[in-house]
Length: 238
Image 1 (cartoon, rainbow, N blue to C red):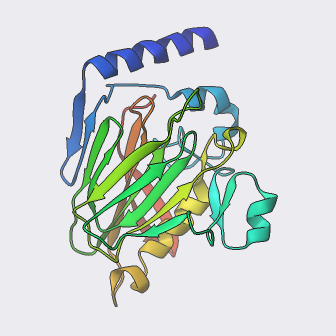
Image 2 (tube, rainbow, N blue to C red):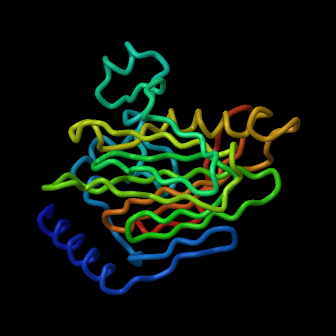
């Protein structure tokens, strides 16, 4: 059964690469080799660890135990899935007209902003700004392999000084999922006065994308009784 699943993924990836497509709705666009349906390889290899996920349509990306950043150096050293946020090459505040960042091989990149354009590998993503709305983007890097498999991502058309990215270069064996609780905490913080002005943001959305096979999930989130609630908008994952 698992062998069959791997074959299906391989066929889907080949089809997607030879027939690029566009996925879009009002407010967002994903262009590139986007398959109609796909089961991400990393999810297949680690499906048993995804049972704690409660982000609708995004359990191929998120799990309760996963990649995150730690404010304390000691905490990051004790957790191979963690990066230390105080390191000089981990967080980047966008200040120029465009910014180039590395999406690490078998790692992740997350950005919080009001929206903008991203070109990363074979994919182009647009998250359109709207009033009192915050956007997040979580990208999964290329699977491990020979040579340099890092991906350069270019960001543009954003509000300088109000876009923050974090790069998660972690060991392969610690990179199966992105930490759901950590992502939800970032979502909650993104809607506060610090990021959205005196009244905070009314709503938020995210795109999660795997650059290996074009798996994606688009979702909305909001605060209900001070707790983040996620709602699925669209996904091409099983």
